[in-house]
Amino acid sequence: MDWIYILNLAGVFVFAISGTLTAIDSDFDVVGAIIIGFITALGGGTLRDILIGETPVWWMQDALSLYAIVAAVLCSYLFKKSILKLRKGMFIFDTIGLGLFTILGLQKTLELGLSPLIAVIMGVVSAVFGGVIRDVLSNIVPLIFRTEIYASACVAGALVFLVLDGLRLPLELSMVVSMIVVFLIRYFAVRRKWALKF
Image (cartoon, rainbow, N blue to C red):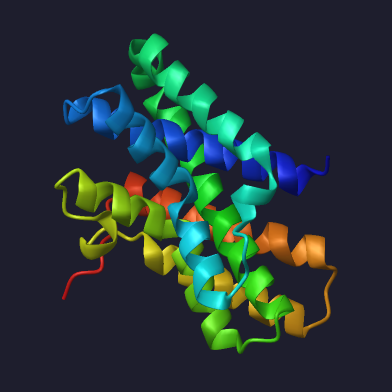
């Protein structure tokens, strides 16, 4: 089990907690919370795979992702107060997941021979559209439509990956540097209240 796979499972787990907590705050029942957790964690990757014609979609070929979501839902209900106290730490993991899903989605699209532009779009879809679907179902304006820097961080990281990949750097190095770019932009955007507003 390599480090990318472990980080991917961690991203699924954290995104599922994010979705479940949103559902709990919106007074959804347990079934609703499970659905929202599932969609938040897997929605972006599922949409990406459908759009690029990769079926069965990725989580159907890996049951561990589903177990991670079940564990996330249970943790959200059993340890809600503790998780909320660790909100800052959860934000860090959530941001790591954002960078990871961006680069994994981008790389998967490139491997199919699609253009770099489409690959960047699919990277962003992988990272943010689970959250978009979550927010729409929870009657919240999606984060991607607000002035807060979110999807643009994914685009920046994806472009960095394309540049580094074009320079023939080792794949692992290109991925790590690109994920760090997404993480730093998103992290400092929240800390310093950067916004895309004209």
